[in-house]
Amino acid sequence: MRNLGRFKYIVLLLMLGIALSASSCYLLLEDNSCVPDIKKFDVESAVRARDFAKKFLDSLLHHGDAILISASEMEMNSIMAFMSRGINRLSGCVRVTTDGINIALSLRLPHNLVGDYLNLRARIGPSEDGFHITQASLGRVSIPGWMMFYMTRFLLDWVLGDRGGTVALASVKSVTIEEKSVLIQIRPIPDLKE
Image (cartoon, rainbow, N blue to C red):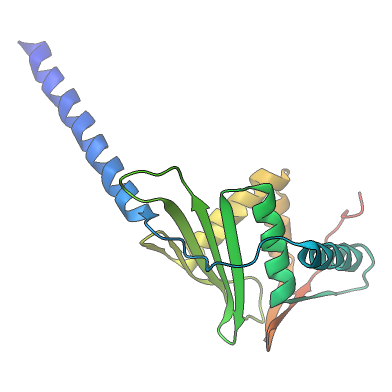
């Protein structure tokens, strides 16, 4: 008789877990991509992405007291196109406005009943004192900017290893918007050349 009571609790917990998973999927997945149809990665985009990467690395490795990195909306979209070529189901775009850098990423999932896309939207705001995510959402769920900042830092730490994401984000001194370009001032990163 006592085992029957435990069994009821286990079944109840299992049903609660299934209900929470289903509602999470409903809130996170969407029917449409948040990324507008943009042209695929072509030779022109490849050249832009390569030139930007070279300019970025040169700025990081040959610096004085401060590093200033400039990126146009077109250059950032070339990087997004390059990234989507490496991960076929992923697409992204960047829009630079006076409010900040608006980033949209969309991961196409296999067709299902809940939604075919996992969409991430974020806005990096202009700032004189570091890197700030002012708005973010994952699917239909709004995420506070500070929480998205920590999620980004965790992801970069995981990808770069050895707290590389923490160091990279902490090195951002300011983010400035000028028309369709972004200027990011970075503090020198110790031991970067190694």
